Length: 66
View 1 (cartoon, rainbow, N blue to C red):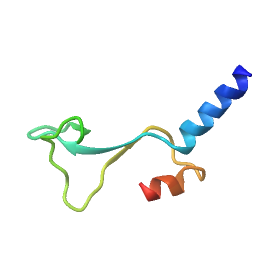
View 2 (cartoon, rainbow, N blue to C red):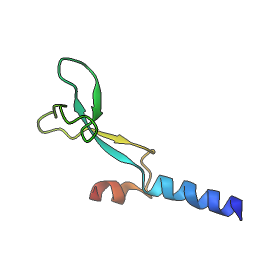
View 3 (cartoon, rainbow, N blue to C red):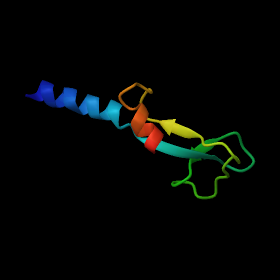
């Protein structure tokens, strides 16, 4: 039972990864989550994402919707 639950958890993690929008901290080369650091600057015309899992066919449509 524990093995099945662990496998299900891994599949959900891959299928629905955590996604963060990143912004640049002024006067630095550091990019952080814009929700956690509201003073970050976004790059015009570019969306920078931090994905919590690799992109696979199982999560591609989920990421496109996000």
